[in-house]
Amino acid sequence: MSVYIVLFRGVGGATQLPTKPLAAALEAAGFRSVKTYIASGNVVLATERDASEVRDSVAAIARRDFGFAKHIMVADRSDWSRLIAANPFPQASGTALHGFLLEKKPDMARVAALEALSNETERVAFRDGFLYFHAPEGFGRAKLPPIIDRTLGVATTARNWNTVLKLRDLAAAVAEADGWT
Image (cartoon, rainbow, N blue to C red; front, side):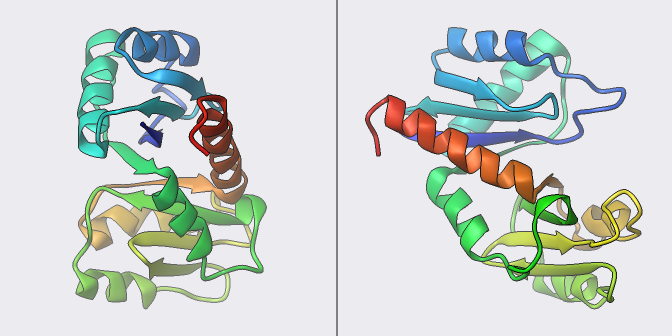
């Protein structure tokens, strides 16, 4: 059994994904201990399936039941722990810091091009397969987020550090509840 954190890209605004019906659909499909966190596309679940099976199954359910056909990214608890441990901006926290999951590994020349755009108010770094974005003046005011995917040539999805830590805690609770700690 593994515990996974599933992130839906592009939830919010005009694209809604109802959390209670989503959790029910995932449980009906055999996923265990399904937990959702805020209505922005965050799910924690347990299963014997591997990460690619989880992604494909969740994507099929989201498409079939909710008409949601955007990218879905999956990380297990050890991936999530690596995301937290590799944070190159330890002085940053809360909503000023974002961790990104990437659909696949980007070309390192593209990563270097994105990192070169960092400045005092917007800093980006790629570490251990994850992207980090520090924007002390706010994500919504930042200029880099709209060009990240295009620059990297890879689909991404971001969560602020408060959410990253909350998802870590939910995953630990799911693991503990099922006796996997």
